[in-house]
Image (cartoon, rainbow, N blue to C red; front, top):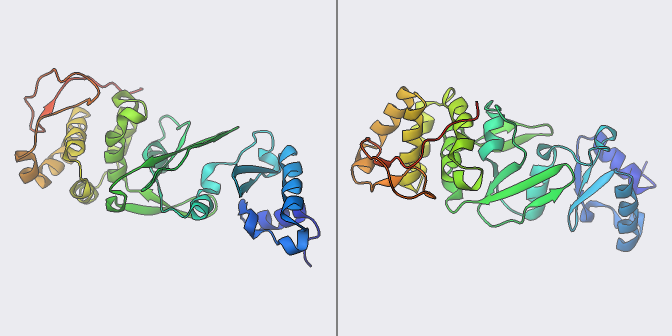
Length: 265
């Protein structure tokens, strides 16, 4: 039996384990004109039953999330990126949390894409998109989310991304603790593979120095061994690219130590 109201269609969709939909998916021939449907969705939004995130993209709010006004991003991120027509992977602090590095839960859900995408911020949700030029080079794996499998950067690729985008996500101090937690599950093969795909050698240099700084000698040694040729030809780079290039450089990573990062312990 076909639902007679939009709210019934939404109930059916939620029962099927789907928490997002686009305007095009609503059977307009059954529920009336586009204007009628939009008016109905507006009424449902006022009741905290749905939330509009983009012009024609909506999420469904179960009753237990009505007061918050938003569901977790991993419930709908795959549908959202399909609507936007963009490949993606969950990255940075959000990926670190999925890998178990959840010392400090990220306030912002972070997604990496090959193009620039406008952020989304509504009550209960801060969704940020990080544009990465060499997006397809990043090793990923699938991790089970609430409604399905999600593409997520591997632990090593996550570590490299945290270092690469440190100054956009809180600085070296902010990434040190999740990097330390990630280091406990780093696999040398993943670390070598991810570093080979990292186009910016300075990111690998900083990551190696930070791993050594954290006492992860095995990971640091494995990374250095895999990069012998590249490191020998590398330039000296500052640990913190936003700080003055002043500091010692007596290390195998050719890092100018112009910062002393301290994690949030």
